[in-house]
Image (cartoon, rainbow, N blue to C red; front, side, top):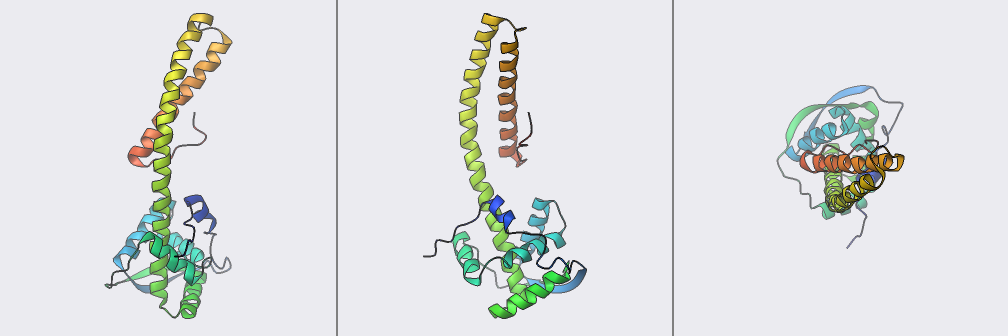
Length: 203
């Protein structure tokens, strides 16, 4: 069994430079025939990255330039992604460089460029979703720990208030730490409820 590492989302992003050929960013339109899963993945990735569907295609094409056919197949096996036989024909916008790369890479792999892009879209979507699932599980466990320490911090804050008074500098500094923990708990809870990422610079 191939033990190819499934990249985390940050590692996946490292595999996604701007485009395979920065000198060929001009947009072109062409028809692709891909599975419904591939079109859904394209839309999901565009929304996830906050860009256009053209950006998503170009990013995935760049990813395909970073992996071997064997690695692509291994990741597909690990993700358990399977391609439905039915295909839908749609006109897509992508960069000229991405289109040329897809045609060249597909020829090397002896598959159609449509199947290559479709596989890439589904795989990248699957990798990111898997990484997000793992991140959410870790954040859920972290939330339990933070809640425990937050309760301890609140108790200590009350003790400091009685000992020093609320105008004391030490109490004021510690009170701000307690509030930061409370705000962090709220941010993590929101992330777990609706997927809003925790702001690393939030207070």
